[in-house]
Image (cartoon, rainbow, N blue to C red; front, side, top):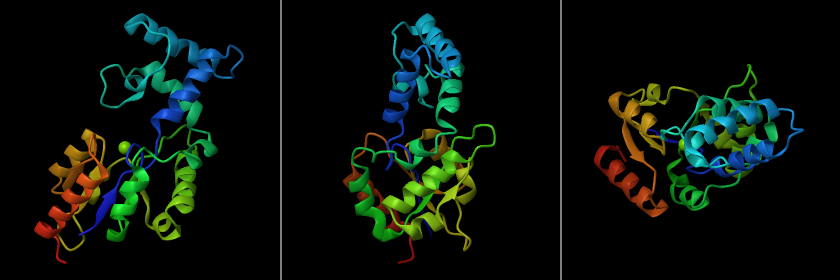
Length: 203
Ligand SMILES: [Mg+2]
């Protein structure tokens, strides 16, 4: 049995710095992506009013997610190695990590792809190396389909900790065990993890 841990909005804080960069691009007429920023701004203005990007605009679970905004986000962040390497810890993320690291989780993350650039993946690898240590960088897996890891090689179910409902549902359907880490404290996550390990684990 293996434990897989998502990065963004579990241990790394993607949303806050992403919105900061997007709003800055929108406010700067000379920005190299000004055309995309203007298109994204027009989209949110026309559909919801409001003049700045908020979490719902880039949140995979939110009905406000829109193509022009995602396009701006991908172009703005997809080639920015430092953005990914320097992401702040998610609130409670370090606490969560310290509580569960003894169980040797494997980092399982979905990087943004932009014109075959691997900046997101490479930057995330750098972040893991710097903040979690080399062994976790070496075991980390970057993929757009987490459900392929639902079952361990010995046939036992693996565990996924993730804040994205889509990943949770797919992993579960593939036979895995899940902890939906959203609006949950690090302590409650550890509690659920221990319950799963004692019910399904071998040790
Ligand atoms: Mg996430």
